Length: 217
Image (tube, rainbow, N blue to C red; front, side, top):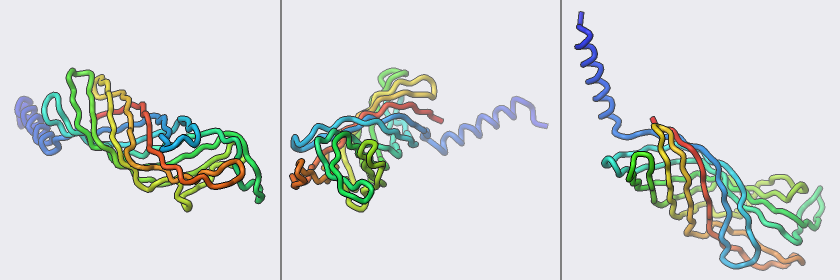
């Protein structure tokens, strides 16, 4: 029979080999998004609306202070604005609507970053993001419930930009705030005036703040 010291040595050796086989950490994360858009011209005043995100990632350590995290997450973003007049289809008839209009998109985000951890409990990360739209919808207050606009293509299929993140760490748990700065046109919204006359296509860029928590294992 093997002695306990030998068993402990073999177990430690096996765990060391396992750690070497997986030289990266796995993370899961979830939280809230506070998003809006930055219009290219001052046609209206978009407001921020709240959504959510959830995802997972891997993190390769380069040294005690540097690492490369890569996250893949599902996120809900959008915005709202108050319209003085808009023509909508209500119960099969065209009607004039005044009030809040909400836009919502569902996206899959890929975020590779470079992270710096100056102290044990704090880290900073920056890098690009690439986003694919998976769904979109519009809501006119209590008059017209969420209706898909995917067939119209109100939003671009792909969004690209920069992302920064500040994280606080307690053991394997982290809390963080992240900012997304869109660099490409994200919106293809067609605007009209109060008489229904076309004003043109509204180009806009994504802006979002994410607040969440993560777990590393």
